[in-house]
Length: 95
Image (cartoon, rainbow, N blue to C red; front, side, top):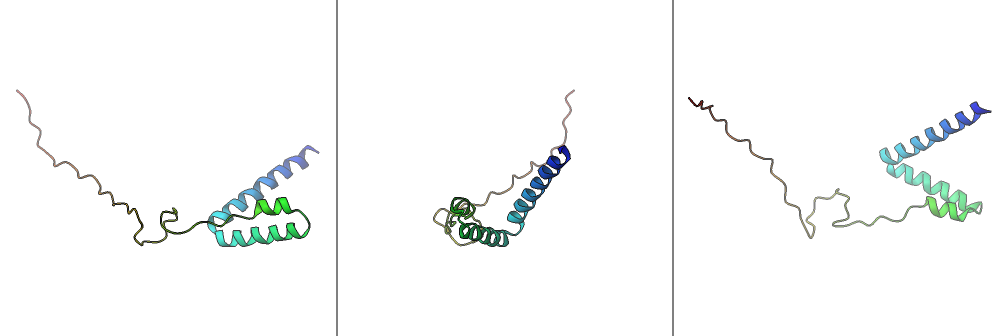
């Protein structure tokens, strides 16, 4: 019985990890899969769980934080220049 519980826990963690990595590596595919699972749950009467799986629409536009467009936004951020190294100086020994 203990081995069954261990395998169930390991399997649940493996499925959750695969779901999370799918969401990071293929977000469009993960969104479609999540929406299809949510619609199947809603068809069977599990409306609260289906509503929880559905994601809210993401706002887009300037200053939304997506970072995909290079158009001018209302508050452009100036690029930061790297610090300049100090010129090397010869060592002066004191007598």
